[in-house]
Length: 558
Ligand code: NOJ
Image (cartoon, rainbow, N blue to C red; front, side):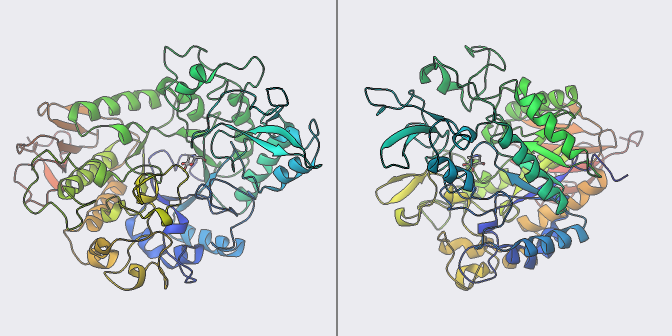
């Protein structure tokens, strides 16, 4: 029997395949590119890799618009290359997690095309959420619900005979029709998809929009005013529908759907694993994470946490408690492909005084990044020392900041906001292809220009620049992950009181992590300092905005 709990204390590295490494020279990352960089992943000493979607897709939402769940996009590779990549990662004892997008397909999916070609009320239409319109001739959408990416959540189709017809629901873009999870064929087909990847050797799934699959589409539809505010936010005490009863998210029927998946998972040795992207009220996370369901659920609280000791401490305590209640482990996430990179997010606002030399050479994006990076390094060391799994996003091991000022013509994200010819908000800034070399075409990412433009300063963050520099962010990540492998355990934590601006805790094996959120240096507790993000000498006080790890065995002299 292989270890069924390998994911409980794992360090997991997220790869956004189109932006990781390109081997065939078309400017878009591919599986062969990932294969050529397995050494980089192995040197990070992570337990698993999570791949964002690589299935055939028109890329209207970065691959989260899937045409075919059981294939690879030809731009990215082939199934044979995928198999080779899984084998190479497994050889390094790195597990493989793939993204599954079950809330919606793309509008190019075979079943959606079949639905369009079939009549209202047909078996083909029933796999999606088609409804008649309102207004005199059905010219208005069935209700006032809105899509996440803006505009109505309904799009009207043209029937096969050319007349304007029904409307279909899409919580995201018009190219992402929502599946009807009340339909048995849909349910069965996803079980086939789970087995397809399980049989290919993947170890688990990251489940996109896991709280969204089940829906109550009965009339009368509640108005958006009641539904919308809760769609992706906490379904809190003021949720007018009550726990599990919101029409679009976090419904009780999900339990049964995921119990069916669990049966498939448990047919493998070790059982397949899944982590839910579930934007739900924290007390509901356990419903996705428990052992009869998916296994783990993302806690995104650190993505929204301000750089503040009390906030971090509160987030940690709450999530450790919640995970224990449901016999799972928590997840810690500082960055992913949907948010501003944390080195930029944690950069202090421009009215705070910066330390000398911390304003970068790119006026648009790099101001105050020196402190942002210091905080980012401190935060990842803190996260890696916590009980549970830490999910890291490609490029954070290089300390990459967010890329700003992407020109309008290059913007890919359907959520982007463009003003005066540049993207001012959106997710492309964290999806810019990685810099592997200090110079050259696309900084070693590809033989061609990268599909999203890389700024001139990217080379200074490259792997090549950092790998031989012991004081680099990359080396800090490698050292932290290697140490974590020897220190991490199922044991929880005990808080140490070192002052209000300090988050310090100890694991029962004597592993102490101290993070200084304050401006003044802090004396470290007794013990052997094994790693510190401020790069000071072992026995010096801990600098502001830094983390140190200290080993102090129980019973050892103070
Ligand atoms: C969450 C994914 O992380 C995001 O990138 C995507 O746009 C939405 N789900 C829709 O699939």
